[in-house]
Length: 115
Image (cartoon, rainbow, N blue to C red; front, side, top):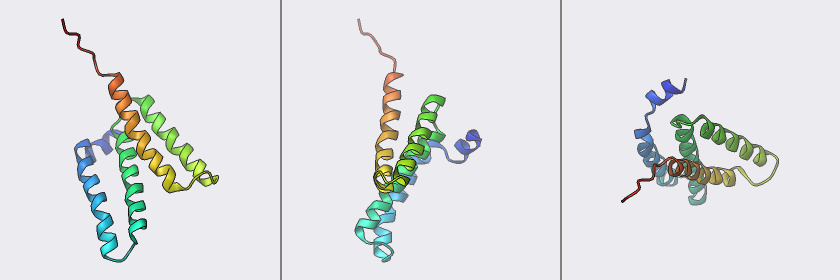
């Protein structure tokens, strides 16, 4: 299933999706759909969703994919139980996903010894 999704939405399209999400805020404000604060919140949530979705779909580590899923489920449960609101947890997901990705990438980067 993930292979089909990976082929449909390649990792190279991440930048395009971020650009589309960033363009939504001014458009929603200009059309009078949302106020500035609401538009900023919507863009923040969508950015977190795009980040998490790409992290899960394009992860080459089943452990990291599982961690993303658990973190997403826990934050959703905490929001439902009244610990913070969904926007706060989406912000946390937006921080955790890239941090996990960078941490795993750094841990797996071979060290080249000079000498």
